[in-house]
Amino acid sequence: MHKIAVIPGDGTGPEVVREGLKVLAAVSEVEGFEYETVEYDFGGDRYLRTGEALPDAALEELRAVDAIYLGAVGHPDVAPGILEKGLLLRLRFELEQYINLRPVKLYPGVDCPLKGKTPEDIDFVVVRENNEGLYTGSGGFTYKGTANEVAVQEMINTRFGVERCIRYAFDYCRRRDDEKKLTLCAKTNVLTYAHDLWWRTFNEVGEEYPDIERDYAHVDATCMWMVKNPEWFDTIVTCNMFGDIITNLGAMIQGGMGIAAGANINPDGVSMFEPIGGSAPKYAGKDVINPLAAICAVGMMLEQLGESKSARRVEQAVMWVTANKLSSLAAGKMGHSTQQVGDLVAQAVGEVPAEA
Ligand code: IPM
Ligand code: MN
Image (tube, rainbow, N blue to C red; front, side, top):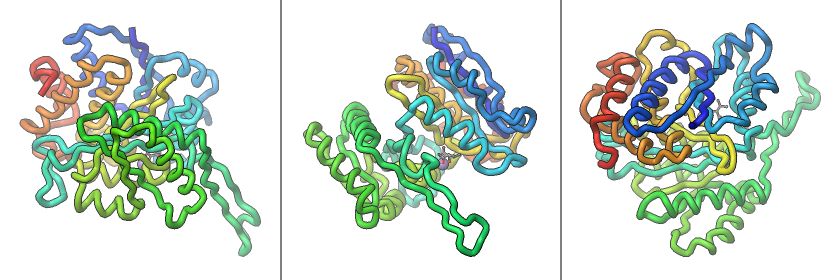
C-alpha cells in the first residue's frame, strides 16, 4: 500500500492535481496496486488565514509517507518568497530531496518552437542539484535601505552535496537508455571556486563510470545548444540555479509548461512530484489549464514507488493523447477542457499498451 500525501496548493494546482489523481486511480485499477492519499491544504489561502506555510507537525507527518504529490505554490496576495521558501523549498530541504529530475522530451503531435526538430531530437534529462547553491538562503543585508546597502547571497557548494548529485547523475545516465553521455553544465570560467569543485568532482567520480562519456558545456553555451542542437544532450547535471533556468528553456522546447514535470528526489527517503510550472492564477477555476504536466508527475511518482509498468502506462497514454487528441498544449487551446484531457488520459491508460 503506497501512502501518498497530496498538496494541491494554489491557483490551478487543485485542478491539475485532480486530473493527476484521476489517472492514478485509473492505472491502479489496470495494474492492481493499492494506494491511499492524505490531503493537505497548504498554500496561499491557508497562509493568509493562519500565517503558517508549513506547520512543523505536518512536516513530521510528511516524513512518514511514501511520496508527496504537489500541485503549485504561489498566491497573488502573498509576497514573493514566503510560500516558495516556507513550503516548497522547505520541503525540498527538510526532506533532503537533493535531486530535482526534469525530463525534457518532445512527445508526438506536440508543436515544437524549434524549426525542424522532432521527438527523435528532443529527449534528455536534467539532473538539477536541489539542496545547495544559491538556494540555501545564506547571506544577508548590511545598511539595508541606505545608499551604502550591501546585499550578499552566498552560493553554497559542499563536496558532499556536489558529489552525491553527480553520482546520482552518472547512475541515472547509465540506466536511462543506450546513449551514455553525461554533460556537466556549469560556469568554470567565472565561478573558479564553486564550479572548480564541480569540475573536479565530476571527473573524479566519472573515473568510476568508464562506460559513460563525459561532456562539459558552460551554462550560456548550454542554452544555445538546447535551442540549436538539442539532440546532443542525453543527461545533463547542473547546480540548483542553473538547473532552474535551463529547465524552463527545456519546458519550452518540449511544448511548454503544460507538459513539463519534475521529481524532487531523496533516493533514501520521501520524494515529491510536481508539474514544474507555477500556479497560473489567471487561469484558476476556468477548466482550461493543461493537466498533462501534473499527470506526467504522477508517472514519475509511480516509477519512484517501484510501479514501473504503471509509470510506462501513464507515459504511453499521455503520448497517445498528445499524438491523437490535442490541438495544442496551451491553456484554453487544447480543444478540450482540463477535465476532458484528464478523462482522455485515464481512459487511454487501460487501452494503450504499456510498451510503445
Ligand atoms: C521551480 C520553481 C522554484 C525554484 C521556485 C518556485 C522557488 O521555479 O521549481 O523551478 O526556483 O526552484
Ligand atoms: Mn523554476
